[in-house]
Length: 124
Image 1 (spheres, rainbow, N blue to C red):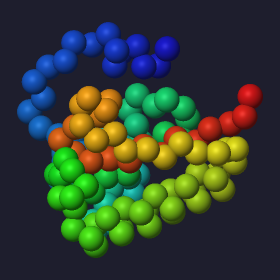
Image 2: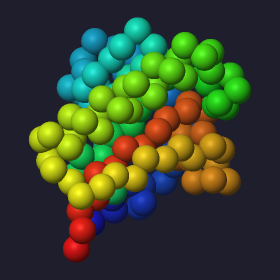
Image 3: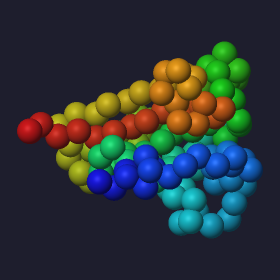
Image 4: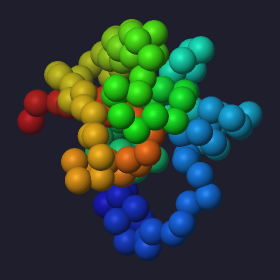
């Protein structure tokens, strides 16, 4: 039910990328930015599949894995590991889905900016 506004709202031409706006902005609460490194950002998902669902994103606006510098890719993986550890400690899920949708055909809601979904899951 919390995703109905996302599903029912017609798509408008967005003047920019919400990840890039979060990176450039100063109001982390408004953009749901919870962590940043020199190369990565962690955002709460505005329309989560589950409690604790976050997005781990490179700061740079890249749509493809082969566009990422190696240092960015390494930082993203370290950040994903830290995020999983923090969620495990605070929410004690039974498991996680960690995924990357490459391109609109693969289900990427923001195909222009790479982002990994980290979604805690519970049995039952």
